Length: 303
Image: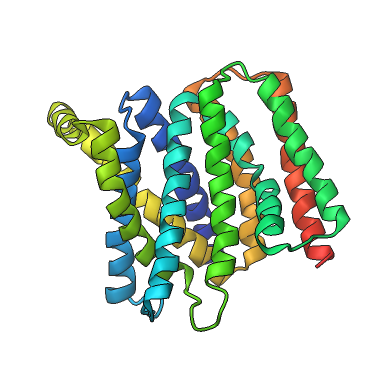
């Protein structure tokens, strides 16, 4: 029974992580809903509501309260970085195929190591830094061989990857004291409403009458509301699945799943969207994935 539960959890983890990525791509590119900021706003509203239900009603984890204005300011800062990473990631999907988006996203360890050094002066072993060479080299090769390369999409995707890494390092610094540490699910519950407050004026200012356009689309095609609602709910279940996999297996399992996720997402997206790929691009992405695995191994071994 325990084994079946673990298999079910891992299946749910893959389905939610890859599902939200592919649905984002479908809505922003294939369906023609070209409003990544509003899409992210829907995700954050869903995360706010479902986090509250999961913690306050279903008691998935104990509720932790914010203890001071300083802690609230720290969480708000994290919320805005978190929000920017998701928005830029969604914007990049408008211009880049999922396969190339995932190749760039795999360079997160490189940015994490850079920010950790710049912000905390934390040094890793020289072996760990050496493993970052294939991580970056692979993306350079993949970029040169990408048939659907788009410069703006590439720059925005690099920004999204850097923002994700910045959030990880920033979170470690800001919420390091025992009194301020928050469970990942509680942190999401507090960060998501901050992101909503930031995104509402941003979407109105940058995407014009996006609410009117969304309502008109919903009237014309009921399936659109279904896609948007399901996509928004999946955005929350990605976080819930991350937590449950870590709780019932280990953080290492999550890391291994994460390494494989990119490759699985690439294969599925190519099968679904039929975007052209080159041997050079796949070779570059493979080098990056190998680099990430070596980086994770080096971090464990040379702590």
